Amino acid sequence: MYKLRIPTPRFGIYDKPQLAVDYLKSANLPVVIRTDESLSGRDRLVCTTFITAKTFTEDLFCRDEKKVIFEDYAYGHEFTFYVVTDGYQAIPLTSVANYKFMEDGDGGILTDGIGAFAPDYKISKDIEASVMKNVVNNILQALQKRETPYMGILGVDCVLNEDNKFVTLEFRPFLSDHDAQAVLNIVDENLLTLFEACAIGSFADDYECINMSDNSSVSCVLSARQSGKVISGLDLVESDITHFAAKKNEYMEYETVAGKTLVLTNTAKTLSRAKKHLYEDIEVINFEGKKCRTDICN
Image (cartoon, rainbow, N blue to C red; front, side):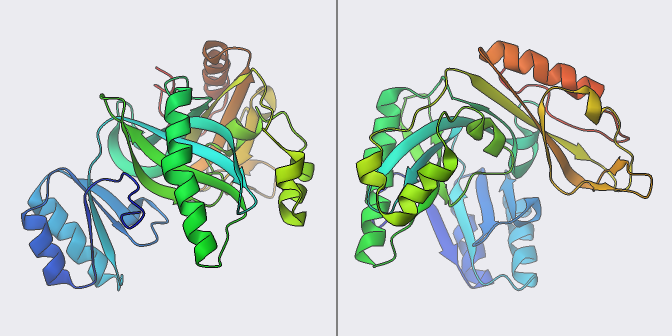
């Protein structure tokens, strides 16, 4: 991103522990520390003190991580801008508001996503156009020059600050677990036809835009403290349910897995109604150690 002049927070990438610690001595706090391929909460942390940052960095290198990435923490509103591309042309899907911290009010550990709503009313058409021009088009052109064009859904994770300017954090080569259903529920297209057009080369001719419904969707992740706890109430809810890894026991009852267990998504004509119905359904679902954010869309 730096080479393409895509707006991004100040960062450093190190493959030697001592050089990484030296960087931390002059880094702005808080600092986000993560691996080159962060796959879980264990691979990333927002550190507010030098001691915490140093300890986490040394821990990552002790796990045989080859590269560790440091970047200034970006304050503001987090969102993902999704597009569909055949590698040459990109068409916007929607913007999604992301909630990545485990606790209400953006507290607790940093995850890849714990809740979302779409479309994101805080992101104007001007911001979306700027992300498309300065980020999406740049990265697609760079991949074309490398003769490795990218085809499919591309997500751009951004933070919008109080000055109405954005920085880019990372790219997603797919929909995320916590927001996929929220996005798909408001797409008013035949997905098979859409992606087939990308694959066979007719995307630019067949689509000028991707039709989206006027509905709004809200998603929330339900996490479990322990595995093997029976989940009740799934048959009583109207929201869409996505299972991370919940499995059925010998009595055909769903059981939890420790960590992210379910994603509930509700879609309605208005965001407030979708949120209301979602949290009503969350109250119906029960299992020991149930945990979720209660401030999605607040």
